[in-house]
Length: 72
Image (cartoon, rainbow, N blue to C red; front, side, top):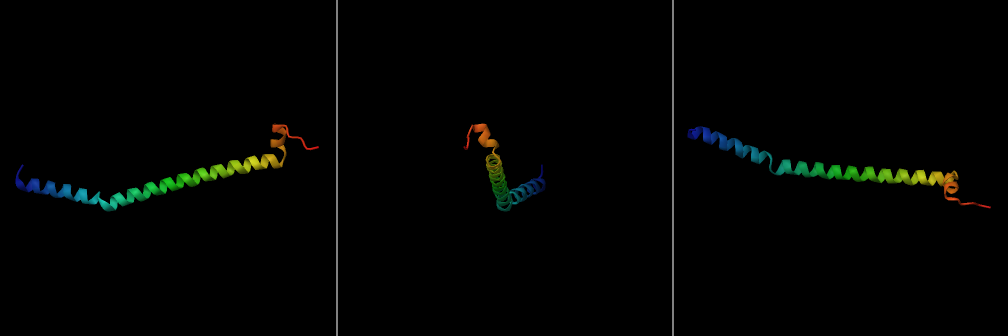
């Protein structure tokens, strides 16, 4: 390998390192944070839907019947 080829390879490697440095790292961190946030909102929505379902079952009396609660 002559010196020119080695110089070209070193420059390519340096450019790749620069491209993957701060801006790329920042994008990865942002995307990771967005994914975590979306996952939290999804679970919060699931919990709210479960709460609404349980509340609805008690309002129509099905939950009370299943638990043996008797009014009057």
